[in-house]
Length: 226
Image 1 (cartoon, rainbow, N blue to C red):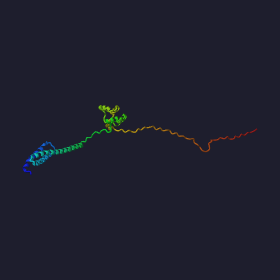
Image 2: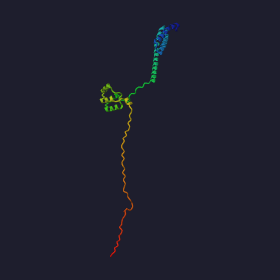
Image 3: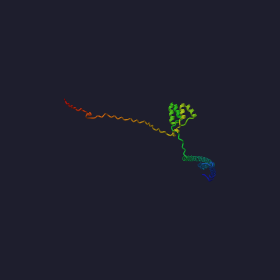
Image 4: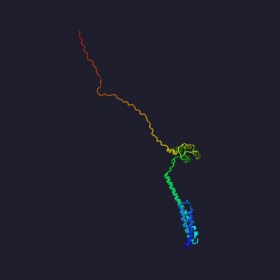
């Protein structure tokens, strides 16, 4: 059975371990790390003193138990502090993103890349088809000297490379105003043909008109004879 004197004797290492555990962390130490090391050191020192008392080594047991408890408690507390720090960092980052959102510039959608041109050239696609793709979709960026050398080494023809240098980028095509083709109205002259009226010969029904007929009157001659 434990006596009062040996237990008092083992309290000195416990107090020393507690002080060392408290001072082992710097002034700017995190709260959970310091508290875990202190509580772990005190608990370990008490447990070590009780175990060491059976072997008449209460002081050594308290010192060893306190050291082990302080280390274990400090590790657990440090893990909790790191978790809290990570949560605070995520919270601050979310607040900053909400307060001042950063909008990234949209990437050209559908623009022809250097990889697309190389893949089409290696697959045997004709230059006319590649040129149609470049003209209709644009390029992601116009090639510079190093890009021209690389494209030439990959088997891209000079015609395609020249078209890529002159082609607009995808962002330029996206920002360009759309031109709506208006229907072409062709005005043709209207020619009015004159109408020709044809009148037929009138037909009269009835007796034919013969006009006036003059008849000679008989003449009478009176002769007086001798």
